[in-house]
Length: 217
Image (cartoon, rainbow, N blue to C red; front, side):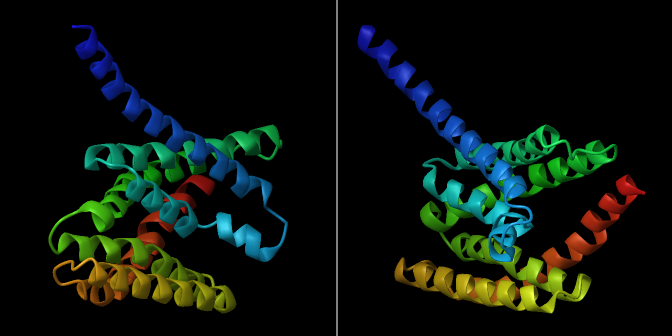
């Protein structure tokens, strides 16, 4: 009886520990995003970008052992990242009157993207079948899509070129990883990543920009 009780406690403690670590990293990432504003362009862009937040979420998903926990961890990490950023903004006395609407939009976006990227990270490492290749494309699409948004949407072509190059490199690395892991139709990662990147750009431009514009007017 005592052994069974200890076993149940260990089973419950493991997910709590994983989620606590994920939440702590999310808070740290959100704080770093705010703290690095106005430093070097490289450091600021490395944290203050949609893809930086989401790719870290995929990395967390890859480190978590079970798929349901990876999905929940992805959602939690995005929530705490937003919380860390806006908490730092509040303490820095830069959280303006329109901040609540913007924070709400990013929180909703995080709740949509966090579980997806948590799942993608887990699936690339531990999944089965050709969904691994699809998951790899989902991870790469974020960097490629933000590159398109920076170039086509904001006309920041210098930064866009860097993001597109990094996205292409990430796509290649994921495809090679899947090939070495003998994932079925691993080449779908390279085929789907640019297509998914375009879809991500359109979603960011039409949906996210529209929502942000509606709360800042």
